[in-house]
Amino acid sequence: MVEETNVLELLADEHRGVDELFQRIDMIDAGAHELRRDLSDQVTSMLIRHTVAEEAIVYPALAEHDEREAARARDDHAEVEEALKKLEQLSADSDEFTEVLRTVIDNVREHIAEEEGPMFDELRVSYSEQDLRKMGAKVQHLESLAPTRPHPSAPDSPAAHLMIGPVAGLFDRLRDVASGRTTG
Image (cartoon, rainbow, N blue to C red; front, side, top):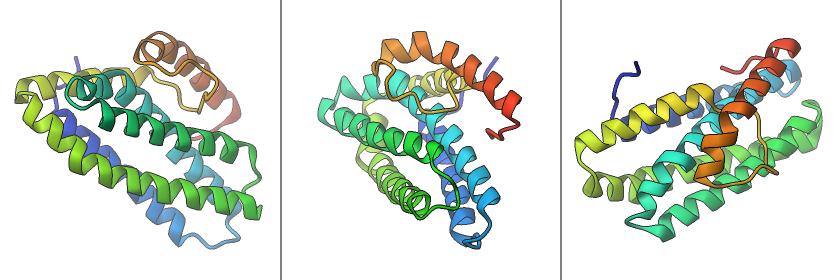
């Protein structure tokens, strides 16, 4: 059974983990293409699992109190997912890879700041500690089943994430193992 961690603490910890990878990417020598690819693949996996869980569990709860903030967050995710899909198709030694990766890093850092401000504040006042812990357990469970790669053509709704996410996640993990890809 998954330990019930407050969803806000869980998401903040995940944000720190993504930012640590961003810091590592920022420190890489421009010629270390394999390492850049490996780290960007790890970032992609973390972000996709995080996104699926937020959109299926957290954003519907947020929308009950602030639909506008939930819609903004979903739009941010859609933009990042498109960029991650593009990044996956680019050669790590190309200038375009560097540009797209920089865009992902900048957009995700901005999104994190917005989430940890207004969104977290709204959830904190709208839900009890017990509710936030239950949400945290649901997020952890869904992340364990979620895809590890972007699927921008998949339906984008909480129900779709709950139904399609685990199936896509299974296929992504099989593909990751077959290719030797590190998914974090």
